[in-house]
Image (cartoon, rainbow, N blue to C red; front, side, top):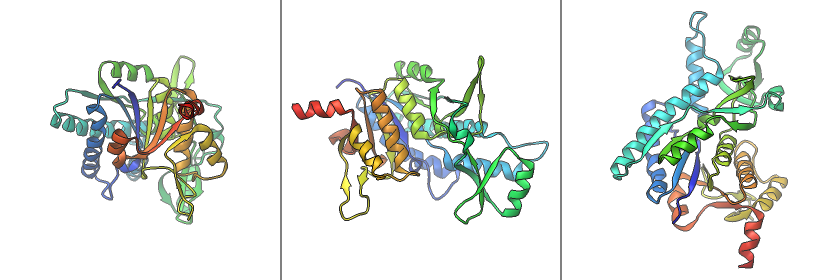
Length: 324
């Protein structure tokens, strides 16, 4: 079978456990690595991306607790880069261990990835992404005086949280580096946490206080490296419409047009499934020969053997299948 270039976007459950310690997260990643190595065993060229929401949140908490005028907290873009490095380190070690157990001579490398966004993205005028700890009303008043450029909103009656912009990616600076690693049979870990958000200023890139959705960043990378598949891993084996209703329907093979109709119907929750579906659609539209898959980490084996999962194809692919 021809080798496929596959971008796999890991959901939070691939790293998280109830215990937030480094040891617990490393143990979770070891389990994740056993699933991912199945792609390598069958000859696929793998590119891995991942989220970092809880990890960067914990880092911000630690910085808030220990920062002083002499030792200030790092800006958000730097915190994203820091968690790219730490999670990449854990993931490299996990993959190296499983690859050695399987007697596979494959190298793994983490790429600290900068993702370009537009300075004119409307998200910069309307911050919506909550990050970091909860604050009381009195604490927020103090913070607002100290940081007039930051935005804080009340979060579901639990206190106040800082919100930051979540702009859409327009480029991945290290896409060519990722392609060179793949060509050299190296497994890259890239666009971790959606990548470090940067804007172009003349001949250089400058970090911005923002976070990029991991699934949209993974889509942009998959598009730029001309991947055959974008696989978005989440908590369920398949996408459903009319979810948790008597007429709930599992989606298996679907087209872009069908998925866009479901979006228009409001089938997917904004904070969870919707961005994954939007990223999948965007990839297929920009790479009509490719396909996008939404499934769970635990379903990887069944996807590889039987094609289980929700597979989204371009409209013309579906029509050609119907004729055959």
